[in-house]
Length: 117
Ligand SMILES: CC(C)(COP(=O)(O)OP(=O)(O)OC[C@H]1O[C@@H](n2cnc3c(N)ncnc32)[C@H](O)[C@@H]1OP(=O)(O)O)[C@@H](O)C(=O)NCCC(=O)NCCS
Image (cartoon, helix red, strand yellow):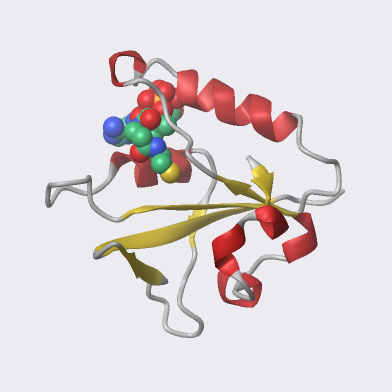
């Protein structure tokens, strides 16, 4: 996890992703070894990381593949993040997911908004 503002490739897209750049945390390179998946480790690691983020954090953002790499199957990480309370970021006003093509592979964004007390 790293502050959104330190992630080099997003430029000025915070509005598009629906985040406040200064208080958003970007989740990069998050993964569990294949042999250890499905045992709640991802869940525990994500919960732990979120619990140790700055108190002023307003949102978490992650970008992930739409399909499992090299297949036509949906990427299970999308389900994982949804289970963790993330919502797919929509393209403004369309109700459709915001899709970004990188290295010829479509990716979507998921965002978790922190409820401030
Ligand atoms: C996505 C990933 C991090 C999830 O970690 P994990 O330890 O396997 O997930 P957990 O066991 O904590 O599962 C948490 C929830 O997500 C769901 N989930 C996780 N993997 C799933 C899968 N392959 N298919 C469907 N649901 C899945 C679980 O069903 C669980 O829901 P539940 O609370 O109803 O049981 C892990 O599978 C992974 O590293 N995948 C490959 C790399 C990757 O895609 N990383 C994300 C890049 S942004």
